[in-house]
Image (tube, rainbow, N blue to C red; front, side, top):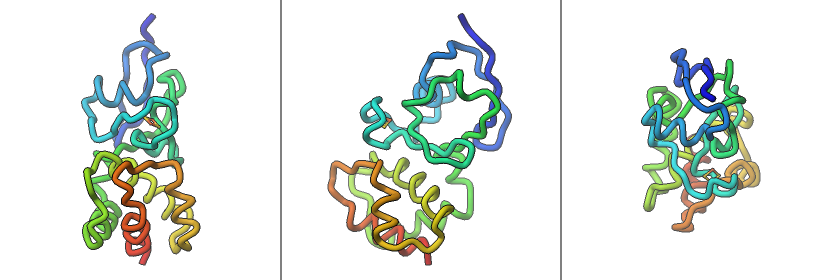
Length: 152
Ligand code: FES
């Protein structure tokens, strides 16, 4: 049975009319065409689907639409419109932190969530903050450097 679910998506009020048990990840990609949020594992392990929901970094593959009523959701598309994104984008570019790029939208959302909590993180805090995000190109060291630059 379809349900109407009201929430804020990238700063705009929206109403999703569909199955409440659908995954937020699938709804973002298929219903709202926000394909910057990537699908890696659908098991909460890779972080490719990371978004910020009510101020917290979450794996959108692990959230059913029924939990989204009244939520404030930001995807990489919404975040890319902000000044904070420009800082992080520039930092990633400065150290060539992007290889294939598949993990990067999730990494960027994890970076933003980390810097909100720790504006001047230690390397340990950076590695911990990104620990839920996998990079198959093994580019972690450059990504950690980029987060450090973004924090300056
Ligand atoms: Fe959600 Fe991997 S697709 S954590």
